[in-house]
Image 1 (tube, rainbow, N blue to C red):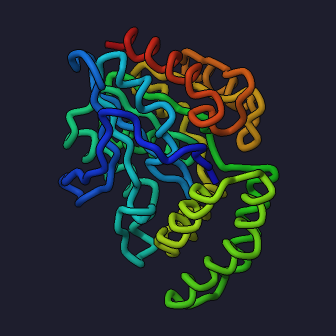
Image 2: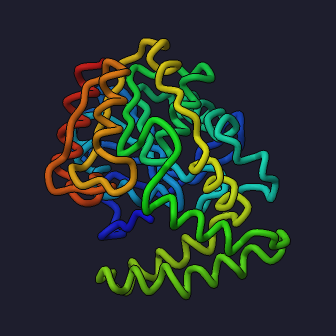
Length: 288
């Protein structure tokens, strides 16, 4: 679960929706607070149990370079509605959503964080053609290690529950596991309230189905490499989701530019926003 440290939106940012060929999506839409918007638009896709708010800390610095930045809630995430149909959360379907959003906002660059990176990859493999793709703290295939164990725990707890019972069971997981973890990590009142609101607003069928896909994702690195677009692999030195060795190897297989962010773990966008924004601006500018 990505935890923003502040919910205060930077100057030039508005909460709104984008209507695409695949439906309506909640976004944070940021323009430069000063100066013209001369560079290509960037579309940011959050990870599992995340939301557009995960990018708040980097929206201002990215836009300050002279570009529009749009962060989105995926289908079934937080403020974007999603159906109770598991097939709607197949990575190919989510990738098609991202491709439609990319077209709707006339984006140039595409970034996916964690599970959002797998979805962004599907968008590109499905025909979306950004000037560049950034995989932020995202691996080549299924999630493993402690993060995978946590997902298995959740799926085992929810296994067999009727659709109508999934919501209350997700609320139990929040109250008994996730909320205590957030408190132990020192999360303050407003952010803690936001995390609860977000978790309980997620479509529970989406949570279950996305988790299942995270645990069985195939390695499609070779297919992505064959597309031939510039790729940027960006991650924290202490990433506790996909091992940094896997991300280094993926970058090599893609022939991608790679940057490791010092002092960051799985969420460099929150843990080291200035360094992350600088690295992204430099890469995007080189790809335009």
